Length: 277
Image (tube, rainbow, N blue to C red; front, side):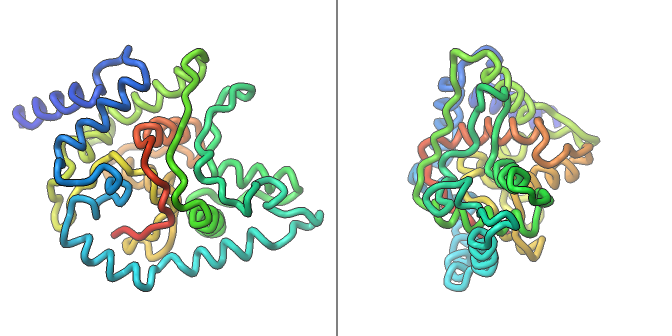
């Protein structure tokens, strides 16, 4: 156990997790370098495919699944919702340009509101601005809308901007980073424990995926769920797996975590929705 903890500490320092005063770009370079060094045979762009970038067996299964992807129905349902007018006659297209192909714009820092805005948060704010009730954030209609908009946005590059002259933006980034590296729950695990030093290792029958590229394929159809879900649903599941209290979907904690983690994948392409185990 002691050797394991030493290895985790070394990983955190290699990725920048213990460099609390490092600037975001220094963090990002170190973060990406860790994974490209650990998995030298993986082309950088392939990290957008998550576990399929490092696990040959899973990749073969995935390529077969992609012939008839299980998220197609979600895309169709999301398209229907996007094109259906609200009661006031307006629609989502009045909130989102380019037929909803805006995934590459999220998450972003809103300097006036002093908070991180995610795609799912923007979807519900669009609804409420047009007199509609908000949707639940983890699955169902909001995941279908996000699936359609992500599908329309495929190929857009992750390009999260963190204004380094805005102390509030830097504080939000720092909190997201701290969340990712902080140990929690009865099992005393941090996100980086599984998806940093643990990436490429197996837990029972499943291989742990690298954190680099994690945000690119959402929303995801998981075989375990039998449905499509948002990244905040997955954040909550991870917290429960380490026996820690979860946080509110689209609450500040998870939005800032998404802000940090997506910034770490800058340069990759969004390719959601996708399918995972």
